[in-house]
Amino acid sequence: MPLSRPVCQLQKLLGQAGRSLGLARVSSTPAPGSMDRGNVISHKDMKVLVDSGKARIIDVRLPGEVANGHIDNSVNIPVAEVEEALKMDPEAFKMKYRMDKPQMDDENLIFYCQRGRRAAQATEIAITLGYAKARNYEGSYKEWSEKEGK
Image (tube, rainbow, N blue to C red; front, side):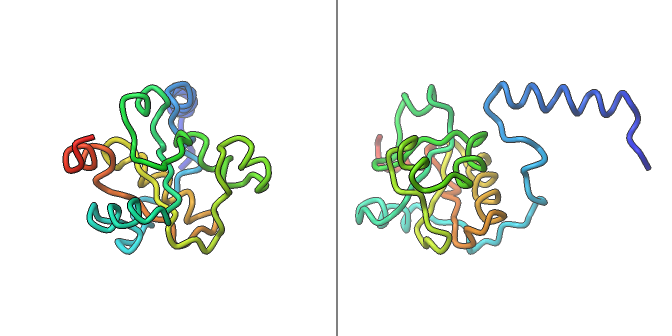
């Protein structure tokens, strides 16, 4: 059944409001539940990777949130930019984000945010684009700051 005109207008307004708040486009969001539990990383495993320096950690919060603290060696790519960033050619990505672009088979590509929702969304976007091993640090910065005192 086609959507009524008022519903379509409401969806358009919500999309515009979401983008102005730094949220990803609804059309970019994969179906709910498409992320496997294997694509979630625990605090314990995250700590090991952070300490080893072998992870590509992407903080998908807004810059103002990142200014209040972040996980070491993470790069800020707001969730609204994740899809575009992962589609960039490697040189453009490196120039913009000052890190090498993750490889499609990168086992240590991890997304986090404040509480895990935006990171889950970013992880699902990455998986949809072919980054099958991308993971969501579900506890995100809230858990990290509580357990690491940062």
